[in-house]
Structures are given as structure tokens and as C-alpha cells.
Length: 415
Image 1 (cartoon, rainbow, N blue to C red):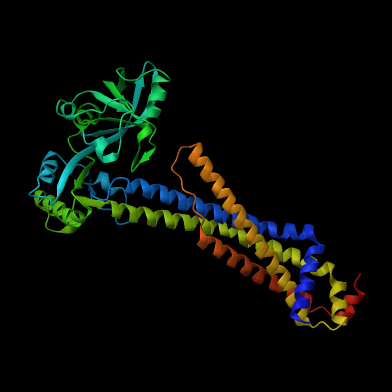
Image 2 (cartoon, one colour):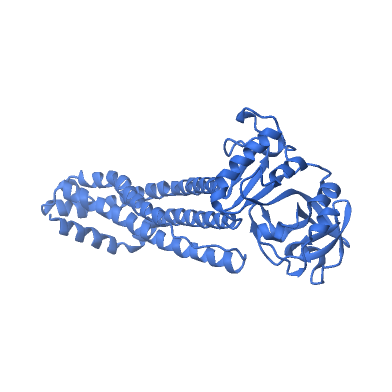
């Protein structure tokens, strides 16, 4: 039997049993669909986070208290060990141009979650204390009212700027500017409301409250240290030198000679982007691998259905052998049927996965308001097709072998 006859026989057999063929490929379709959705959505999430990180500016440096974590499983030391290592003297030292090359702006940040309320309405919000530079560094601008200024920071003014979600939860449709709210245990006056902004680096602007860091330290958190210090330099070219200067300055202040004893660490936009990219990529592919396990289940289902098919077509196998087909011809025919089914299932799964991912992108963009990007995972698609082919090959070998070993005489007598 020539190769083209084997192909023709296999395809005609699949066409003659459409319902069985559809049920056979269903497991593969679902498996590839799940992989495509996970990888595509994961890639979109990674792009969203990286865009937010990059929006901070390539010339921005973040100084964090505590020992630098060695990996994802070592995060707790950042703020629990040496969490109070950044104070006013560190802020003053980092603000001096003779200490830090190209330094432009230096802003301390304190933050934490606390309850806020207004006339019986309550909300759990992230409270961020910063200087008058907050809107410039993080790209925030008040839609109503205004942001606090330098005088408010110096005077520890009890004023706040609230995110759009906080405004909705506490004030509904009414104007929030000029009203008083309770932040923790003290009263503050709302002087501004932000437009919808969404996630900005490590905080959600819509669900946050912004106030002078001096007031936040005194009235809300009762602390003298900072949770972060943001340093901006003149250009991206100054960043490596500035990082080295910051490290040297803080080590000198803290009498540290051994880098292993650092009670702070310095991050740049590039460092954060690399870390985020590594973590999100690893998580995405891990979840994709978990989803791919369903393909094995689909492969087992294909093997079972192909075994049933072999049994049902025993007389057909006997007739083909009686007419001159060899065991190899029968083996290749059934193996081709299995591979064809899984490959078709893989292609359908990829197409459905692309459509589903695009649909999720539309929902997240138009309904959730996220700046989500649709990303078609080409690598996952290629791997999906290859994996589908391999599953058909692996799980189709045994049924094909069973078919090829049938005796033509016994097969013709089979009822």
C-alpha cells in the first residue's frame, strides 16, 4: 500500500466517524486552550507590570531599608530586619550633590494600610506619605482640588489627597474637596481627588490616600523612619554611578565595612523590571505546564478511543490484510489517524485560545480599565502543535500496534 493510499484511507476513516473524531480531539482542544490562555494572559500581565515600572522613569532609584532578599522565598527581611535604617540623616545625606552624582530630587515615603471614615462610611485604604514631589515622580495630578505643597510638608499639615475609589466609597456622588475625613485616629481635610489611575508601581492610586510624610509619620504611623527613599538623577547615564554613591554614603553613615552587613539595598528601574519579568515568566510557564497536564489526560482518552476503534474495525483490518496490506501499512494508517486527530485538536485549541485571550483583553481594557495588551504567545503556539503531534504519536502507538498484529483469518471471522 503506497503512502498516499494510507493517507487517503486514514482520512476517509476519520470522516466516516465524525462524532467519534470530535470527541477524541476534545481533550486536546481543552488542554491547548488552557495553555494558550494561561501563557497569553500571563504575558499580558507581565507587560502591564513592566509598563508601570518603566513609567517611574529610567533615572529613578529606590532605596529600601533592610537586607536585600536573596530570592522570592526571602522577602520578609526587607522591612522587619533593620526596617528603621532610613531616617532624616540618611535623607539629608542623599540630598547633597557632593555625595550623590547627578542627584536632582530626593523624596522619602512612608506607607501602611489603615481605616478611613466619613460620616459612618468606612474604607480600608493604603496611606502614603511623601513630599510635594509625589505627583511629579509618580505622574499623579489632582482632577479636583490640588496636591499638597512644600509648606504643607514643613508644617505637618493634616491634609490629604484621595484616590477616586476612596472618594466614591466615602462621599458617593458628592464633592469631597474641603470635607474632613478620619484617617486612623486623626482628622484630615481633603484638598484634592485623583482621577482613575489604577496600579502605580507598588500601590493602587485609586484606593490610596496621599498626605505629607511629616504628618503621616506624626499622626498615622507614629514613626521616625522611612519605608522608602526615592532618588532621581539628571540622566539615565548617571544611574550606575549614583547607585554606587548611595551605597558608599549609607555604608559610611552606618559604619558598615562588610557588604554582607548592609541594612539597606538599592533598586533601579532595570533591577525591578528584571525581577518582575523573571518572576512573572516563571509563574506563567509553571501554570502553563500545570495546564498542559490535561493534555496527558486527553492522550489517554485518545488511546482508549483508538483501541475501541480497532476493535470495531477488526473485519476491516482483516479485509485490508487479505487484499495485500502489510502489518506496517495497518500500523501507519492507525498511527496517522491518531496524529491527525491530535494535531487538528492542537490547531483548534490554539485558535480558540487566541480568541479567548483577545476577549479577556477587551474585558480587562474596556470594563476593568486596565492598560492591558493582547499578546499572542507564538512560542506556546508552536510548542502546542508539537506537543499535540507527540501525544498523538505516543498514545497512538499501542492501538496501532494492536491493529497491525491482528490475523487476517481471525479478523475476517470476527463478528
